[in-house]
Amino acid sequence: MIFSPLARRLVAAANIEPRRNGRVVDMLILHYTGMTSADAACELLCSPDSGVSCHYLVGEDGAITQMVGEEMRAWHAGVSSWKGETDTNSRSIGIEIHNPGHWLGYRDFPEAQMEAVIALCGDILSRHAIPPEHVLAHSDVAPGRKIDPGERFGWARLHAHGIGHWVPPDAPDATPLTGDELRSYQRLLARYGYGIGETGECDEVTLKVTDAFRRHFQPDQTGCPPDRAALRNAERLVAALDP
Image 1 (spheres, rainbow, N blue to C red):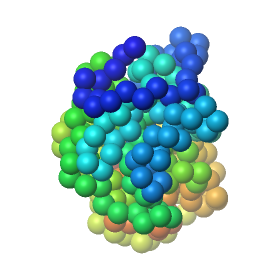
Image 2 (image 1 turned 180 degrees about the horizontal axis):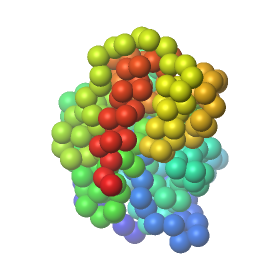
Image 3 (image 1 turned 135 degrees about the vertical axis):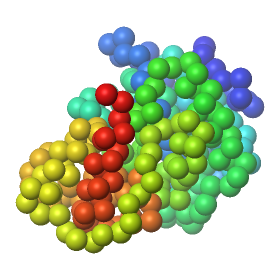
Image 4 (image 1 turned 180 degrees about the vertical axis):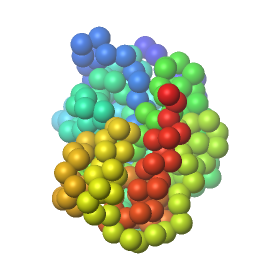
């Protein structure tokens, strides 16, 4: 079993299996628990009847629990996709970060918890060839269905520690995107990895993907429809990718 030396305890999850089709890990997906306590989340994630599991759980006090070996496929991403691949679970490691979430009192992630998440991410990245742009939110791979870990999570702070991909958000510019600008925006998000088509229409998929994009990369502008600030941010993110 591949485990992290940072884990304070091991509680075995039931819902695990080998990674399919020989897929190697190239993604790290961050979630929040959306539950009242880390203990309740751990119980759910380890229950054979829950239909879910995850590799790691990080409490608000920074305590790390490992539930699945990194070599195994956990059931954390659900219906999802990135860069056209839909079996996210076979290519990823999942970290659940305890936070009540948007429906139970969403709040900032405490300092001890953020330090633990940064340390755990760095430890995982030391063992797996995960590119920065593949350190993602659950909402990135399941836009519209999931919104975690949400706009309060410190993606910029992770990037400052060499984890994940980030560019500082542009200043707000609420000019709506239409026509060629909207198609360019959709094309850029698809190039980055989001499941979006180049329709030239501000359709439901575009709104859902934009919400996910903003929660990760423009947290101060969450809830806004596609606009020129989002387009500029997408341009700069794609330009910052390794060639």
